[in-house]
Image 1 (cartoon, rainbow, N blue to C red):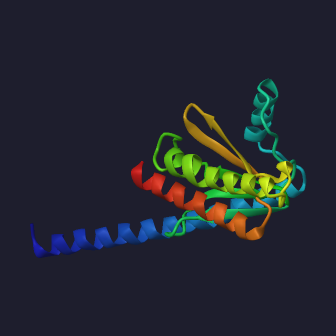
Image 2: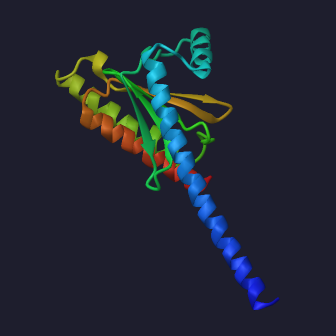
Image 3: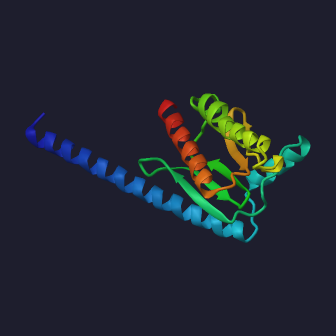
Length: 185
């Protein structure tokens, strides 16, 4: 192989790497655009087919219902800038839906062991202690529900987060958990 062939191969490699970066940036912009469109559609009362299906499943088996219309839509991003989920916020609750490109299994650590088995129950227990001391009513205790389909996370619904600080903590926990799950997938 001649030196000129090696240069051509190296240049081709550089072109491919630059093209990949360009496409990744384009994908990020498209995801952001989708988030904005989702927010607009939600404000107009539109419900995705997945939510409509979820509502019919919920009516078959009683489960808590989410708020009808989100007041705010927030993209949850990993440290590398990739969107891992979208959070649909209301004053009383939040529904977090993993990015459609991700297939996150409930069995992938640290989802069940850390988020669902430890951190969120700790918050619930803190609220229950406040109920015992008379600071909170029973209706204000944090509640969380995971909707899954064949082991894949479809959405996480949380009610009664109460404060912006706590909401931020919850969203950070979910983002961190999803990042760690992606590392293990």
